[in-house]
Image 1 (tube, one colour):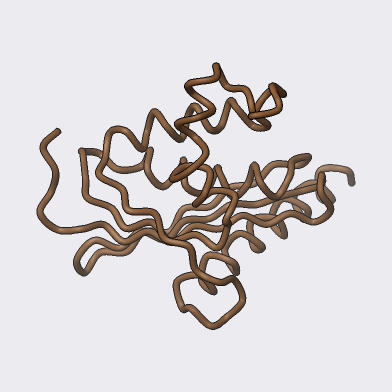
Image 2 (cartoon, rainbow, N blue to C red):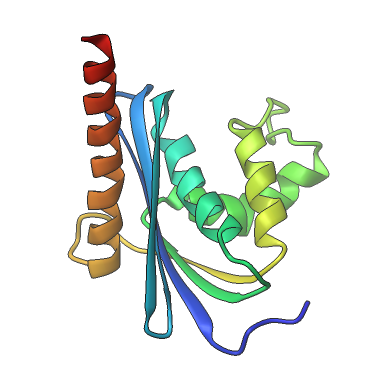
Amino acid sequence: MEVNQSRVIIHTDGACRGNPGPGGWAALLRYGERTRELLGSELVTTNNRMELMGAIQALESLTRASSVDLYTDSQYVQKGISEWLPAWVARGWRTANKAPVKNADLWQRLKTVADRHEVRWHWVKGHAGDPGNEAVDRLANSAIDTLLNDTRMSRR
């Protein structure tokens, strides 16, 4: 895989109001002087699914193989992709207890898109003042707000 010399810096987050409930995801991508915000929402979802969607959508938005530093406040995402995923794949998407891996559809999608890039996965503590993390937290929550406002308006 041929990779860009400069790194893409990505911050991702997911949020959910209730678990399950309405949720939002967000990603902030920085490449040199360029910045791009991505966000989306689902009416009934879980926090873990939204955390995964932030990373998936960010990586899927890249138009060529890239070197990426991806920051997430989700240990589920960071440990899942860095530590647990190889064993899940080897066991046919089963856990050590032989149960189906939760959110396997999204983990498979994340693995496919991450394999196109050179990704370094970083965990950051949420709500601890990291500017990138704070920005994507606001974006993910604004995606939920927009979804709920749109839903209320369509009921009128």
